[in-house]
Image (cartoon, rainbow, N blue to C red):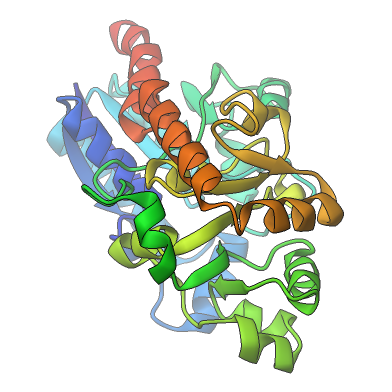
Length: 347
């Protein structure tokens, strides 16, 4: 299968990881990096993102069609492409090219992120939408979607893997992160993590600069290590943590989060927010540990922080489950490809 793949394609973006998975599955992938279609000015980038107008959007749609005519792919794959116009998808269909939208975020969620204007117009024109939430199946159908497939977020096996030949228990004395959270300051996470720290728990936070804005100065100085972590640095931080926290983003109506699968794939001890999505994918207290609310989270930390043997046992079982049950990109992308094949035959 030949795929024209458009998305944010940097080494730090999961869109690139999904492209790699398609290549590993044997498909020919022609990349179109959407980072090349935004203004240099930070202010202009924000305006374009919100309104999805201007010469950058026009050039993006022109180039999608030009590449499609030149490359003649079987499929056009858009990974969270908010700047596409519905006319572009109509023209792709006339060329006999099936179209797929992969959306990791929630266009219908209560967070009301900006930038969805053109995307909502495109929903009826994509041949297939790939989403992460049960509720989105009905949302997209009600908005006129032709077909909707739910899969899950996933880990990238070339990046998220355990330390080779290392004994979990033996490493524990050198671990530099007690209770580690790597990610964004969404929802009530700043207050939640601050409370854990004020009760004497060894919290460490890595993430973008929003943490400086949302943590009190003394808390930021104590907890925030500064800077987002990607690739090998992200993997090492998971290895170096005694407990790896994973929160749902409630403002995005998450059922599970890719961080949970990445932590498990790296052989880290996972303490995640309890949800039906997490419970369906890991056996509680055997392959991962879950919490609901602050009190239970603090209690689980106090229980497992000194119990390195239990953490090692659960981390190993979680790693095995993630590999065995296909929580990586290859297995998840294979599900999409299977759904796409009939579309190609009809195109």
